[in-house]
Amino acid sequence: MNSYSLTNNDQSREDRDKQQKLAETGKLPRHIAIIMDGNGRWARQRGHVRAKGHKVGVESVRDITEACAQMGVEYLTLYTFSTENWERPSREIDALMKLLVSTLRKEARKLNENDIQLESIGQTDRFPDVCCNELREAKELTKDNDRMQLCLALSYSGRWDITQAARQIAYEVKKGNLEPDEIDEKLISNYLSTAGKPDPDLIVRTGGEFRISNYLLWQIAYSEWYITETLWPDFRRDNLYEAIRWFQQRDRRFGKLSEQTDDESDESWLKKAFS
Image (cartoon, rainbow, N blue to C red):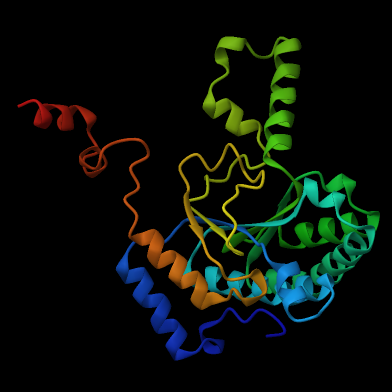
């Protein structure tokens, strides 16, 4: 697949049927966030340099973005480059920067044609100017699109996100614009880099590791976690469908009991429980 093909005319009948069945089976996640792990292992297993794994991983990004947009997923957030990734060898970082630039140049127009907005979170000012410029142009081109938001987490970490939010709140308190007693969970969320986005319903981690990896630490409080052994370059839409089917079987209680989530009124539930 060389570019996005998000119209029904370009989608196979079999794939449309799979997506329709998912929609009929249960509620689709509104926001899917993915830790795209395993590029290096995929390359090593095949005797390639790590950069090859990253390059093939872009094909998975295309396919998953396409599938999510077709199904009506509203937000897709991809852990593209973590703060810790800066510690990798300079040769690999250089290859990743070049891949980011070439991918943005190639895909921005297709995203725009298919009404997908590109966003980013993280310390993108740490990237080379050429990367920042390409990212800024792609975001500007797609800023008015509303079919789906594709968000790239770039030079991102959950601890950084919470720290920068705390710093902004402290400044507001210092300036007298905010009282300490006014600080609550909603206010903190509004100062995170993900402000305005719903928390992820489903987190997918490829590569089989059981780690959070400093990803969206505040936002994943009640996300469902799906971990697969499949390495990211091999993860395609059928793997995504499997993750969504698993998600649809989950009993999402958000700290409540099943009886409470089935009844919107806590008072009504209490009356039933003690009658």
